[in-house]
Image 1 (cartoon, rainbow, N blue to C red):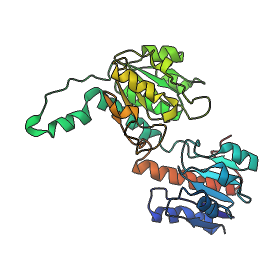
Image 2: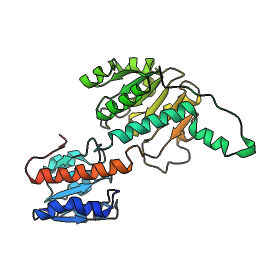
Image 3: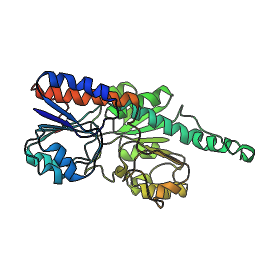
Image 4: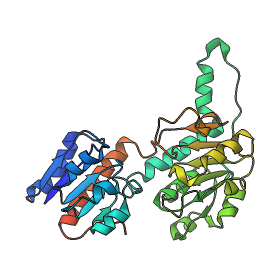
Length: 318
């Protein structure tokens, strides 16, 4: 079979060659494109002869998928698959696999980092110190210990985040479609979404992006939060009403926010509401992006390919 990796995976070509060697040893053809493209015609050109297509976070739309005739598997080196038209793939009988688990630690650590920055004004303090003689003065912060942290979505990333907050001495509550015994064992109390939002000092969002979760944390839901609470979102931007969030931050109805994801990728337009929101720390969708996570996802996605070829597919998204 022919396997085509359509874009770089942010690891060395040496590692790519190492991971491709077992595929070639079994007689399969492996093609690697080391430059990313978003052009649909070019994506189709790279894909059309491949039995297995491997991508990362490049949009892979219906206009490409509908033209595929050989492809059996779209192997996605990402946890979320909302950038791939799954309905189009289903219509063509093409299976999807993802790299679930590769960034659990990296995302959870950025959640903690954003929380600490909002609580301790780390970025602002750095900027203030660099003003030299114009230093404006000290900023008093808050501690995570003893705070109630609400985890919205207790999948693997949500659970890892809860573990880190627990290590800081926080109390845990959560909302999820399915309750995890592991979460309960670490002391997390499951309750309703409204209760999580109204009781939490820190709310961290960990839901996948789909039709059911788009706008899930709406203006109405945000208004349930305490005026001294903070919201952290390292999941997907459209899950939260960011325009409403910015308004509530600027009116003091929510105390702060740490946001890594938006309804588009950076660069954001100059009038994007969160850019001028008070007590807000923004990062450009990098929660997943660490050296360790990139190597882990490369190994997972190549293992997915090998498992599929050997007849026992792994990480298939139903």
